[in-house]
Image (spheres, rainbow, N blue to C red):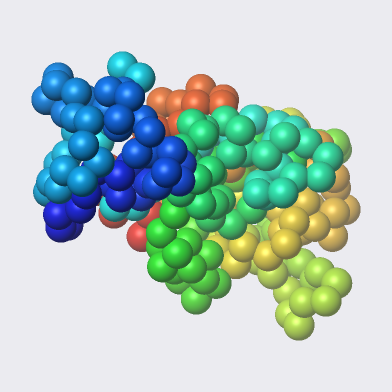
Length: 238
């Protein structure tokens, strides 16, 4: 952390161009410690800095790390084509900060989605070399059988893949639902594996990444939260 002028601080936090940020400051819309600061050249330490804009409180964050409980019919894209983008579920400031999804969930897949403006974090989390387990709950068209779970655990062959892909864990929940844990993160992997095993995925929900679970976060569909250090550490694995 370091000292920055107030206009640079606001710009870094996603409140618009420096010109717009200077106008906000000059208009008395920015308060620190309850007092308006109207000189954009005011320099201050960013570490732990709290400020208020339009009566909404903010904490300075060098980077943001976010968990979203993604609803259905939202696209994990900054330029969605057929459905709203997941960024519309977040404050506008995050778009200015270039927050992006970490990996992708299909528009009809729901559940835990990570988002950040930290390029190194996004790259590390998306790397197939990390082998971070991801837990999904799949609803199937046909009943879940012992043969189906055994086939998913032993591995199925997918088109364009050099060898069979296997689930790390797989168990039946009820007649038409199963839990499946994958590490590879291939394109449409759960749906393609179920199809290769002779069934069909009619609904899919991601419930955990590493040791971070939606249940622990307590997020309803469409809700999001910042991740703290302890929650970030859980992403390394179960």
